[in-house]
Length: 354
Image (cartoon, rainbow, N blue to C red):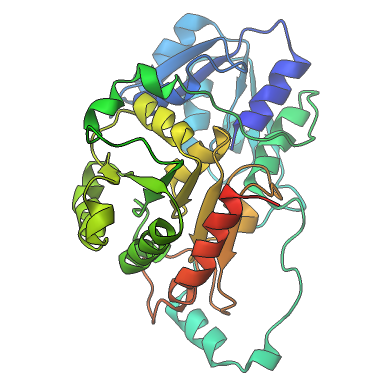
């Protein structure tokens, strides 16, 4: 979601040398990205002093502090970067030379308490507010665009953009059955969500959707996930019908580095996913995504450019969502209320847009 702002910054400062500082595990996202000239990586468990020392050696003149953490501001302060721009937040304003106040359209992601949730679900439907709840420019993309606008860049939104190496160059084909990849379409399934179970559409619903899509289409499936999702991926595979599970589905859970994951996501015609990192990556690579939303808000952190019709974002009309909790304290009605039929229809619409 930072890529539109960085592209606008590059547009406004074409001669600048822009270096991106990022955790080492995310460096692959920025390979050959047109907004940046260089990538500095932060190894896991690096101290503030280590990072600031490396920044000081490079003698940067300006620092755009995208995270809202005190640590990110402290690192560039200790590095002696003369100009330091970021949002005003507790415990760090004095570390910045330009601390921007919160945008008027910004909406905090408030984690609801159990008492608040119980109060909301106890109200009759007629007592609940109707209509749009959020400003049109509430999405997180605008947070970053507003920052670079302070340095003269355009705040007009762009689609998030990433690039991937061709799938054929990755060697991932070794994971496929010998007679696979002959179907007319390839559909990705991403049933995990590292944040917690409140963001995970039920695994039985993923399986039922895949079974129905296989019944209607000549298609194959890729299951995505990290090392922690291997068991979840196998659970999903076990729920698929025998013809689908044998020869028409390949699990890449725990088998891909970041660059390989990006190539595989780009290779899919559509990705059915929970609200998680691969959702954003797929959308930025140009792959349509279908996303059941539960505890989080598509209006604030949905994939791609807000309003992009390539993506189908589904949610239930329940009063307690979004709660922004990791686990549901009641009956998981937000995601249980999203039917297999509606998600199947959304995937088919993504494959065959009007």
